[in-house]
Image (cartoon, rainbow over all chains, first blue to last red; front, side, top):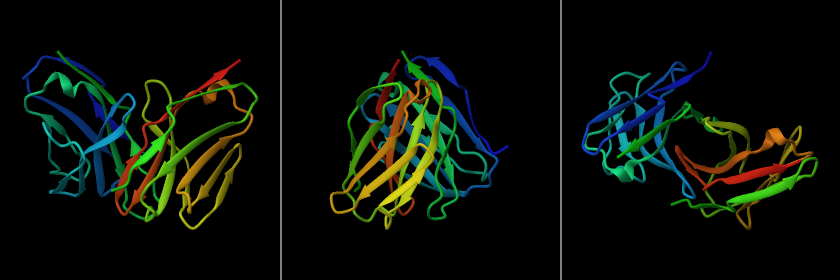
Length: 113
Length: 109
């Protein structure tokens, strides 16, 4: 079954404590992306990756890091989380072929106290 | 860059038609998508339309695209309580997807 998985699904942490949200896909897609969803703002892209070891900033990259060492995994790293990073995070993957849509993970709800 | 706008809320009665509207700014958007997000879940693709099409119908869903006005709409016929969700419009330029803020559809019995 084609899947995008994210872990953890829910996380409550404190300011400054480093955390990683994992994303994994089994569809062999070249492209992967991280979004954050905030009420009234829709989805805003944080970072995306075109393939292994190739990443680029999206619209709201400040305070986040990513890596793409393997094609299937695209972890999101918050080195020093702050309360304004409290949000719902989605990982998405796609093939890059025109017309093909993005496939989304189930989301990770992060609260930073 | 692309900017996508949607109204934030829509309420309809069960059995009526729902029309969710979206406007976008980048005329070079090649594909436009409608995604549905149910509570506690990720986004799922409902339908999409290529920019050289005016209309696409898929069962209860009808997508209309007015390229001149950069306006996209999603019509859901015979709306059911299971259609209650947030609906996102998204434009695609190359590999860049830009999402609107989402329209929360509430279906009243």
